[in-house]
Length: 437
Image (cartoon, rainbow, N blue to C red; front, side, top):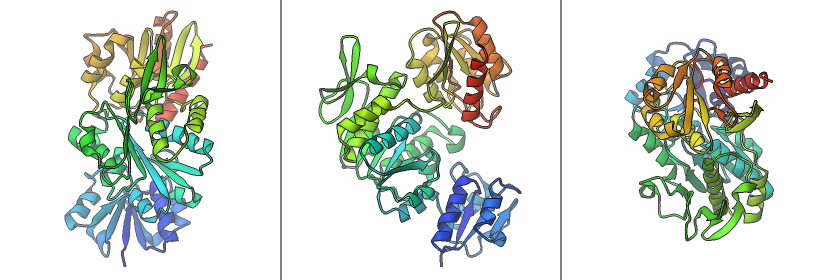
């Protein structure tokens, strides 16, 4: 009998516990924390004797055939290192999902934009009367989606998920973009890129970004459609310019004016084109896809307009947690930008960040743990100021800004030095800005 050891007792670990209990599979559950937050929920499902907390010893691996690891737990963890030494199979919750799913599923990844594309695709499917269930990195863990008995599953996958996936035969796989992120976790740019490209390995069809050099070498000989912000021929998606207007297009056919799109930024036009390409490969008609695009308002904390205060626009892009996301957001805006950035840098390339965006920025106001690292790279390009908190940053921007300026919170960093999450950071930004009036 295969016996599982489940490492990580967060939301993903809890979904694994529910799934293994349903499948009558015996497992032991381990967490380095002495009091993980979901412990009461676990104890409703499994025996207390099957829970081990704190430090482990080698006896934990007795009669264990497979280690299930929650996303985000690094291979540097001593328990994972020991499993590797013993030759124990290591999998993720996505592998358990693949083993059990009986319907088609789509997998979506990218350094930026994957949540936007997942939510838009979900709306497109609903407009097409397809029962869809979406999750994994976004919202509910993948295994919890199986109880929905949907017609189609949409899985937003992080590089952490993809790092461990054994097999991923998706109906469609899409990689939106790659910018260096989580290098502290993956150890190198090469490892991070390999994790992202892994999404295509067993895919039945693929959607790819024409601007990703070398992407084609990772695709199988399956049906594939590309997207990008340029004019294109063939069965691909792009942009057609007609005077001052830009149109989302397939081949040379205009589908929708960019003026009819509610979400801000040119990078979101790319996200929409990617979603349409995926929609085509899963059999959606163009009409409901366009209806969904016209209706879609985007995600909270992603290029979200907050307030206009003294003719200064305040925009919440707290979900811009890495350099690539912040670059895309900054470059998508017109007009003078006062940038609020900082937090935990995660090994981000701030030199590249400064070189990429300094011409668009009027002033950068920095806060958080790695503010000085970012300031060092911007100092030769842009006027910069370091402050203690996000509140200080907003108030400084208000004093510094003039009519027509845009104050953009796009931190290029994780939030955990000062906030519970990027959501908490974004909510605080909105609250502070709205209290200005």
